[in-house]
Length: 305
Image (cartoon, rainbow, N blue to C red; front, side):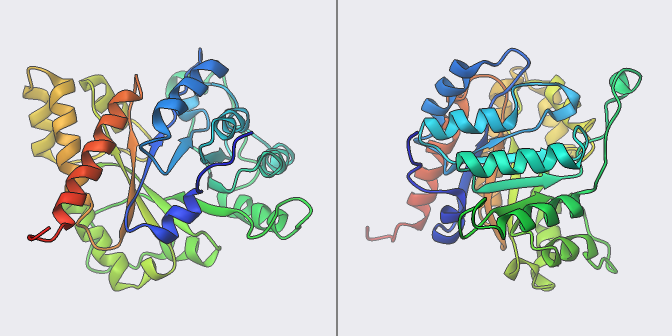
């Protein structure tokens, strides 16, 4: 097993802005597919995110996928949800993650079953996200199971346009539970994101946890529909939605839009990085990441450089 050059935890602490990407997983994904994708992604991203059967579509176990990612010398951020496992299975997966060298986790309650699957598949939800986080922390306290400094634990948040009396209790509760970073839903509305982040900054929550914004690389209107149907629906402005609907080439327009959003998100106070959501070949995500890093380096260069 190769050792990752750095971990997501290292990148959050060391870099001004981190970049991660979703590992493309589907029902037909096999080990060689994972290895091939990581070989492309590892030069452009700080870590790769390994999803846990999103939308109820089964794919390779996130622990097995993470093992393949580590074999290729990249750091995986493993997602685990409470929907599909009871507490024994969750504990087993956490111990398995620690055993193979996983250091970063995104722990969630998990999405509800899509309507099309409700009659066939039953969600477990034996424990909730807060209990899952506590379980991971308890395991991490056992140095025989999880070497110091333990798991770097994250969770999800839903970015919203905060009303004047918004208290951010949900985010505050995650920080109280020991979560170190949170991820928003897919976002193409930077105006709403700015107001949401301003509310977190005003409440000093970014002093307690890092915020990663998920930015989708839209390749079709079907992808827009799928993101809008998710439990944490796509945050998209009317102008962006209209722009995609009227585009002659939705994939090209989606990439142009993603570039614009990435640059804007990087200027939002309190945001620590982005996770690029994409479908298809990883080369598209790498192209975006390489372009973004070049643009931000140029923007930070002094006029006389």
